Every structure is written in structure tokens, then in C-alpha cells.
Length: 212
Image (cartoon, rainbow, N blue to C red; front, side, top):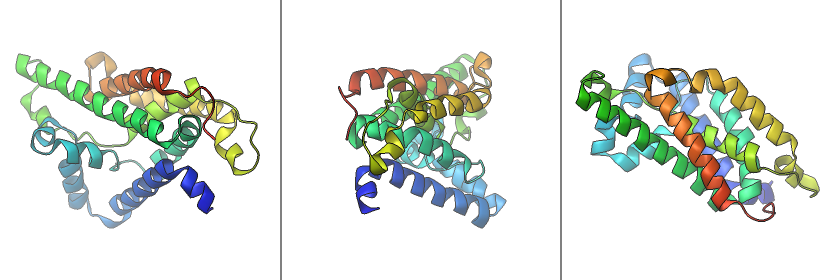
């Protein structure tokens, strides 16, 4: 187990923190507390102006969905991604996707507010969740994950079946992550950008052989 934790610290820590925050949000906080947490951590235009780093980091761990939903999808994407890229490169891939997707989608919203296309109240939009991280990881696994001939625990993350799992997960998520794209909704635009960044970053960062 200790070898497993040393090999996969990024997905283990990310999923553990996500689970902990999700459980607290769902089972501990009352509705008023939930609204306060979301408002404080959302990557909206107001929070990005006052505390950009805090909002970008915290928002990735606050989910309004059921506690098990995003951790399950994160496991399918992050473990094989780390197996293929290593922890640092995988973290760079999903972190870059999360940051750029947020900045592009919120930047587009700011421009639309300035032109009067959408109301100014959207500056306070509740935009939280790990979906930019997870969708970029899933696409990275689908495109660049590879089978491994290694034995033992490494088969857990190196099996080619994970690529099929990533494809299935993206298929399940597609109606949700792309909803409102025609209206340029912030989340939908962000998901498209996150997946594009994940694909491009994966092409640039992928090692010549699976990380062992």
C-alpha cells in the first residue's frame, strides 16, 4: 500500500480531499452553509478579482453533486494518467487545463457582460467543481493512455481497459458538460477549453514510454 501511495500521490490526495469536502458539504452543512461555501470558493468574476489563486484551488474540490460522483470519474481519469505521464506532468496537464478553462470561460463572460449580452449579476455566478480537472484527465487517458506489461499493482493503472473506461465516462458526462454550449454558458465553454488544453498538453508532455 505504501508503494502504491508513493507511486500515485496526485490522484490519491486529490480524490481524498474531494471526497472529504463532498461529504462535509452533503452531510454536515445546512443549505445556508452550502450556499456560503459555494459563494466563497466559486471561480466567478468577483472572486477571481479578489482572490484568484484561492478561488482556482478551492473551487476544484467543491462539488454540489452526490459525494461519490466526481471522485469516481476522477479515479478513472487520474490514475492511468499518472501511470502514463508521471505525477508532475499529470498535475501540470490537469492544472493547466483547469486554470486556462476558468480564465477563458470567465473572460468570455466578462466581455459579454460589458457588451450587455448578459446581465451583470452573472459576475457572482456559482462556478465550482472538479469537472475541468476530471474531463481533461479523462481525455488525456483516452488519447494517450497505454497498456502495460508490468505485473502486480501497476496493472491497476496500466491496463488498456482504462482507456475504454475513460471513453465511457466522457460519454456519460457529455450531456452534462456540454449543456448550454450554444448559449456560451460558462461551464460548457470551460469544459471545451479544458479538454482542448488536455489534448494539446498531453501531446506535448507525454513521455516516450509509460511511466513505471
